[in-house]
Image (cartoon, helix red, strand yellow):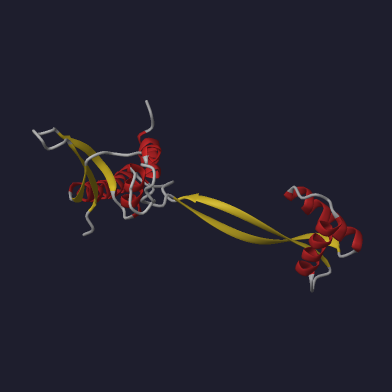
Length: 194
């Protein structure tokens, strides 16, 4: 059976509403006890480069020596500085009840975010524009002798509306009625700005 504390803690971490850990950086100065000679500084610098995984290049070595000399200033021995990063689990000593309370907060935040999103989706309203055309022409069907300005293809119409934020909703064809030819209703929609 799964440990209830681990399961609850995992759900809290998934939600990302509550910080579950903190990271602290500490600097520690360590006295090596070695006299401050060029050989000892060189050895400490090479050791530093190896620990950090840096290449043993001249510029890296000079930088490491400078750092060690700065740390050792005012001392007769070689002093090195070490940084350590410690991640602390904030819920490490929390009781099951405290974890349940934190999980309740996470669930309330999640439900609130979902409710906000659903409200926005439910209250979306659209405005519509209808373009009535007798025939939809493609660029290949452009009549000869018509300039671009006095004739609009279907693609040009779609581009004109889309540049203004409209999207094609549907194309509806009205049936032919006696002497009136069939017409195409091109319906565009966009989200109404509130």
